[in-house]
Amino acid sequence: MTKPNLAAVKELNPPSLSEKAYQLLLRKITRLELAPGAVLAERALMNELNIGRTPIREALQRLASEGLVSHLPNRGMFVTEIGATSVQQIYEFRAMIEGFTARLAASRATEEEIAELASLHQQLAGATKKNDIDLYVDLDFHFHVLLAQASKNAYLEEVVPRIFYLHLRLWFFISSRTGNWRSIADAHDGMTDGVVKALKSRDPDEAERAMQSYISLRHTDIKDVL
Image 1 (cartoon, rainbow, N blue to C red):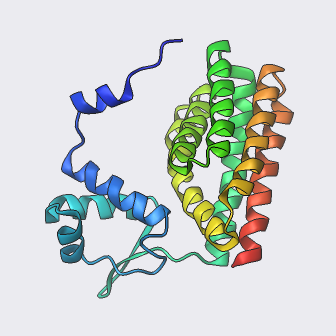
Image 2 (cartoon, rainbow, N blue to C red):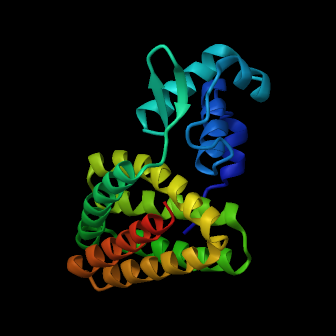
């Protein structure tokens, strides 16, 4: 399978200023460079990112719609806090949505999609061994997005990427507390291996179980450090 040259695509289709602001803020928030509860002042962000007010505002509104930014009347915008109640709701939702996504994919994925998911699984394991967290995060995102595409359900294709970034921030939160992202990645690699095996054998029950088991493990991890 020939893979697209993503770098070339980006050069031909440079992101808008709004998209650029969104991606920069998304990275800072998910990686805790902007801590939970941090004030998001437009003027300060304009100076830091060297981007105008309108793109910054549009990016913040988008992040608010995705649950990563909160708006408090008369107080402004803040990075959403990480609390026990919200964490539980996120993982409950993830278990239901992504577990069902894996279940559908086991029945509906094409052989080409399964092969690509298997390749991504191998690349994830390689990124862990190389201690390349940036590559790992990028591959992880593409694994979950492709799994959603393999479910052949347009609503899941829309929801799963949005859930991913809520999960990613919690993943970095756990890593910051334990000090070892690779041990967390190893458990994730076990999940992807289990899902891929279930897809190859066309076993919806096992695909759903593998995904939900991993999500439950991550929920336990974060409860231990909150």
